[in-house]
Amino acid sequence: DSKLLIPIEKSELILMQSTGLKDKNGVEIFEEDVVSRNSGMPSVVKFGKWIYEEDFGYKIKNIGFHLNSSYDDEWFQAMDYEDIRKNYEVIGNIYENPELLEDKE
Image (tube, rainbow, N blue to C red; front, side, top):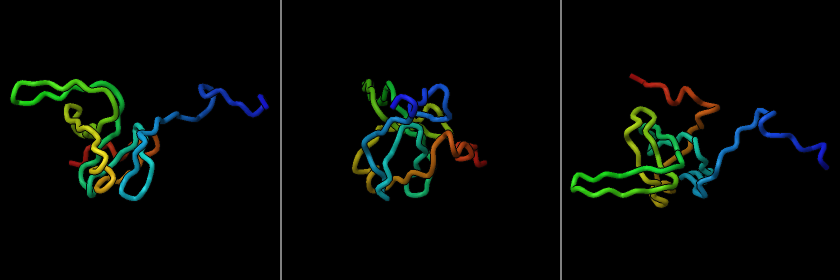
């Protein structure tokens, strides 16, 4: 029934893409979620292109999900399934929990 359809741009909804992964508590992980590794520094789940440059002179160009530090835009890490499943926990997302991204100096 078309009366039940609501255009997304006219709603308060925000679309978030699933990574297909779950954290250590079995919670599904989405793009823009904030995750923490063993209660450490929070990271934001991102999707897009990123380049890993090794000190030994090679570059790895990637596209896909990765983690960005909430404190350092230059820091990123590939999402390793086993590490995520065993050590990471979803603690919120950037839309509902912006305070998680504040610098805690």
